[in-house]
Amino acid sequence: MKMKKILAMALASAMVLSLGACGSSDAGSASGTDSSAASDGTETASTAFPGTAEEDTYVVDLRSEPAELNSVKTTDVPSGDILREIMVGLYKLDENDKPQPDLAVETQVSDDGCTYTMKLREDAKWTNGEPVTAHDFVYSYQTICSKEAASSYAFIVYDNLVNGKEVYEGTKDPSELGVKAIDDYTLEVTFQNPIPYATHLFSFASYYPLNQKAYEEIGPDVYGDDADKLVTNGAYTMSEWVHNDHITLTKNEDFYDPDRCAAGTIRYTMMNDTNTRMNAFQGGQVDCINLAADQIEQAASLGIKTESYVDNGNWYIQFNTLKTDKGLDNANIRRGLGMAINTQSLCDDILKDGSVPATGLVPTTISGANGEKFRDAAGDVVNYDPEAAKEAFEKGLQETGLSADSLNLSLLCDDLTNAQRTAEFFQAQWKENLGIDVTITPQPFKSRLDSMDNGDFDMVFAGWSPDYNDPMTFLDMFTTTNGNNYGKYSSAEYDSLVTSAMSEGDAVARQDMLAQAEKIVAYDDAAIYPLYFSGVTYAVSDKIQNMTRTGFQEFDFTDAPSSSDNSGETAEAETEEAAE
Image (cartoon, rainbow, N blue to C red; front, side, top):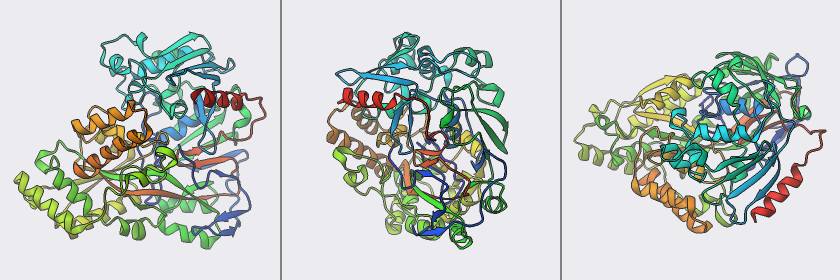
């Protein structure tokens, strides 16, 4: 999210840039206790908000329709939220965002740190009755590493697995990809280089298994489009999907560990208006909603229990660098547009939710080398500077031979209340500091993603949720051939730095390469202009227990204490020891 992921700007204050999707957050698990944290961190007494009336059912607001529930293709946070409940992989993130063995009950790592050999549990089933085996992972990885799958996230597999790029390009057979079923319940995965966040990848949607029979019978083009076009293996099953209204998940009684479910039923609503959400919460129709800026104080005054967390996300302006007629192929014009936005005022006066101005592309929470945060090591890359913005913008106009009046720029954003409010702030900033008029083009989240896929935009207000706790999750997506590089930015120097960092074993040298790459893409070339690192504040009823909400898991209801005998702790210890 994290599915990680492209974010939907459902609130000016909060849509998990999780997603994705790992570091820990300030508020991991909502326990339903009798106290609550106000927006200033103080404790307030919980009052008459017991939640929805239906027994053993939680109703939470997802805000947006999931764009793609095919794990091979998915990139967005709402889809990741659903897939996390209905699918399980080799590992899963716990309530502290630490990867724990799930289907993998025993893991051995080779001396060079590249090959992971995992014994799989033998009691996992697909909803079509078939067993979950090592072959399902082989099929999944080979599928995502084929151009025919048209996966925007294929890179996160083919960039890492042995022969991945060659298989993707068709110069090697899929059987040569670095994944093998040694037998039905023994899986071998071989990476090109040691990956410090490998177990995080194993918990990520692109590394989920795929049931070949179901995928081929249903058809890749429609797989995951409806509740009856999906075969899953997780703690919940999807019993209902009324598009753009709600999704209902039901506890999977055939799951090997049904006790991990926080409730028998989880219903996700999709309300795109902040006032509608608040009214529904106060009326006992929903148990959890994200709060807009002006609702945080309102919630405190009403005695509504609120919780907050830093979501690891970054919101930014992405430029379509192919729009030569709009001057967006020019770095000075792009940089001027970015530097003209007063991000401190944005956070203080518009968002008002704990978000802070971005000083680079990688948020402050992401780990770097030797126990240091990457942001501290890399330093500040971008900042608000209206005079420098005007100078760069006018220089860019001279270089392109364009005039400010001829640009006719438009900004694509989500159609939700706070997304449009934030876009209007940018619009006013560009008018005040650059003297230009920019048109706002709001679209529903899925339509916005389609427009980005098709390159049908000048500028887009977008967010990214990390998939794992490493700066690479923010930086590899802007290499020339990456499927998430919607602005079609291309820099040989940037590509070289990112690619070299992938195989660099020295942590400090790797960090230096990534810091150089970040400066190139966010400032020198300004293909992406970071705006703010986001925070989330949400209201939760007294009813909810065992709900995990963190920067890598916007929603997870599968962290309830389990009564089953889980060999995960032993397996995790063996994995860490082998990796060392």
